[in-house]
Length: 143
Image 1 (cartoon, rainbow, N blue to C red):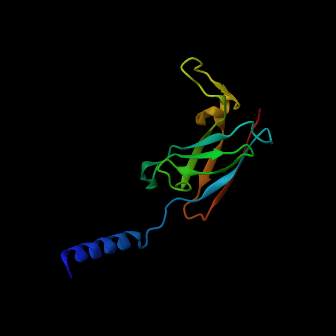
Image 2 (cartoon, rainbow, N blue to C red):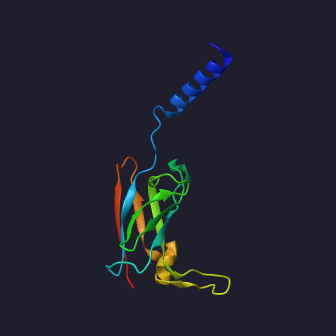
C-alpha cells in the first residue's frame, strides 16, 4: 500500500468512526403560531432562548430560531444550524415586522404586541424532553 493510499484509508476510517454511534442530540420541533387565532400579515421569526437551568444538567445551552410563514407554520433550528432544538426549556420571543427598525426609524413597525417581542415577558415557553422523537408546538399571540 502506498503512502497516499494509507493516508486515504486512515482518513476514511476516522470519518467512519466519528459517524458511528453519533446521533443528533437535537429533537425535531415544529408547529404553528397564530395571531389572534388567525394568519399573520407577514412572515416572521420565533427566537427560542434557553431558560435558566442548573449548570450541572449537561445539556448544550444553544438558542434556536424558527421562521414562520403567514399561516404560522414553522420548524425550529439551533443557532448552529442543526434541525430541531436541544432538550431543555425555552422562553420565546416573536418577530414579525411591517417595517424593520432602521437608523432613521429605530422603533420600526411590528405586527407583534410589545409583550411578545421580549422572551422575558411573552409568557411563551417550550419544553423539549430528552429522548423525544419530535415536539409539536402551538402558540397564539393575541392582538
